[in-house]
Image 1 (tube, rainbow, N blue to C red):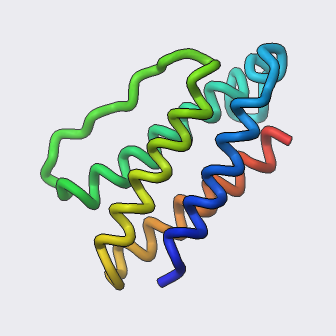
Image 2: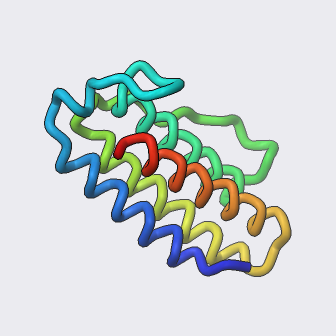
Image 3: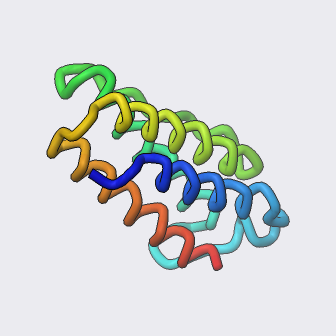
Length: 116
């Protein structure tokens, strides 16, 4: 299984990019989302859902990461991404965890490409 530390590094880089964005860029539309902030929140929610799945199992009632505003998106990506990386590390060499890591890494890469 790839190293979850690679996911953490990619998440850190993307989160820093969001934290440095001016309001005009955060609120600017990107394909598939009304704004970069909305796209970032969607990613943070995906990462948080993956961590919850690994930590609590599929039977757990899903919880959605709240919308804390455009200026919090970088922090939400960082926290959710790190939570997922820890959960992936704890899962070990599990096929489902490997698939989840691949999905998360692809989503982080895709958003990095969208936000420019």
